[in-house]
Image 1 (cartoon, rainbow, N blue to C red):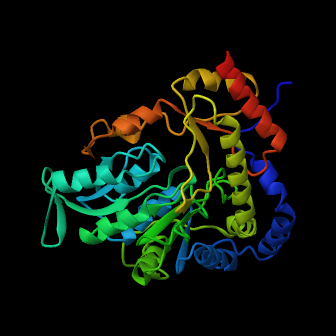
Image 2: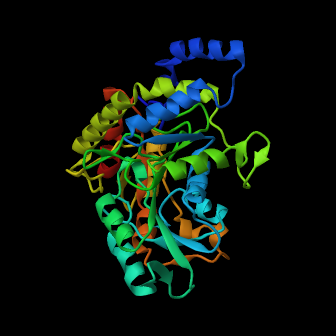
Length: 385
């Protein structure tokens, strides 16, 4: 019998918390204290502590968190920032928002995070290091930072990235938009670089009812600057020392996030159970499945399989009532928005290859075992045919 299984189930997640949320909303509506209030401040502290960082700065979206974090780290006009092409486009946008330039490198094929080989190829063959600065020999610009992306909930190889950053005097901004609660060598993602950005877009492991974001850092200067910039560059009311942003996490969303944070580990553990069931059920098929690592713990924001028959499988599953997605069909370096931009690109073969083969199948903590079995069965049926 045909089912209707969603790629993401937002409603069931909200059902678990709505009673407490409604009670807290009543308190907010009685005072109409909507911005920069006690719930936002509490959530900033709670999420920072959860993620093993010192400070949290709540903002209105994950994209703003990236842009404002780079600004707070001192990235600006004519600087270059190294990141991957295979990521959601907001990673790249944030660099341009600061009048800097992206250097796009390739990913590892086994877990889709930043390739250390590609990173070193750029540094050793395209740059020179002098006066404690890494300079792109072609553009003559200062390469100042790295943004590793913890894609699909899987941490990047942070030890190697941080060692390279230290050697070449580079800052590190973790893009954690899909990795709430993920771990690298027993440390939480978001606590490893100079700063980190998270998205609370409604489909994330930890999600607002719409949009939200946060910057994490253990650097007090980055924290102070981010707090100033998110509020129009104010140092006190009506005194604006810099051109800033209007970017605040409101009290309505902060209540939701505080309640969901209490359940995040439970929900992430269920995602890992679902991933284990998928991997066991699909292991004998001509598919490339997500890989597990001893030193890092994915939280499976997405469960992504690979096949050269991706488009046919996508249509087959859709016909059988199974929601699917493709994250992402066009790598950033091939996006029309970059066509006439000054972007350094090198060795992006893996990014282009996997973009043609990836398929996200349903993954959320409220998937039932029957639904998992049905999905697995239909994928088997596809390959039998």
